[in-house]
Amino acid sequence: LEWHLHRYGRSYGDKRDVYKRPDAKNNQSYNAQAADRDMVYCFCYAPTGVTLGKQNLKLPPTLKTLKACTDGPFKNLPQGAARENLANQLHKRFITEVSGTHVG
Image (cartoon, rainbow, N blue to C red; front, side, top):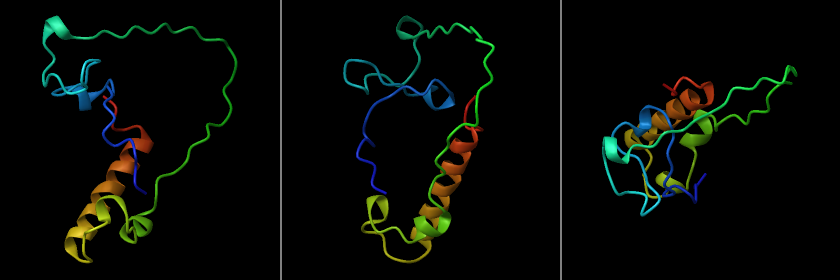
């Protein structure tokens, strides 16, 4: 479960970017959205009229899988309350993100 791109700087375009957002220079250059450095994203809605098929979605690991994990942030974490708490936090985050409720 170790994610090799965990330090990759990116802009999410939602509430996670309110206080800190990476830039092209060093991915950590500022911590607030100053007006002179703000970015604007423009999108054009152009429906094709084609009905989309069922979306493929890979579900996140189950809570049981996370609790049994031995790599990543769990690598040096002993069995007990701390491991259980981390597994619960990650599972809640994964489920929130896959459901789309984290946006906005």
